[in-house]
Image (cartoon, rainbow, N blue to C red; front, top):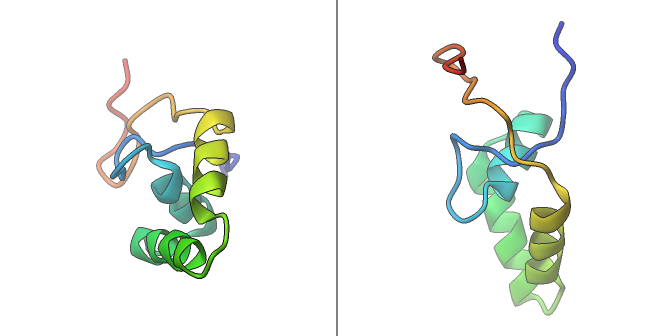
Length: 73
């Protein structure tokens, strides 16, 4: 079994791949993660700040592995 790493998604991204990476790591729908960020932000929380911090500290995935196999060379 491959080791799971928390990385920003290169396949499932809208802005920076943070929500897609979190969704892949926790095996949930990326729309739910994005909605959670929006809800936390709208309720006066720091959803946007958390997103930016995660954008800075999460490494980007090194390959485009996914449902279609490994495309890296």
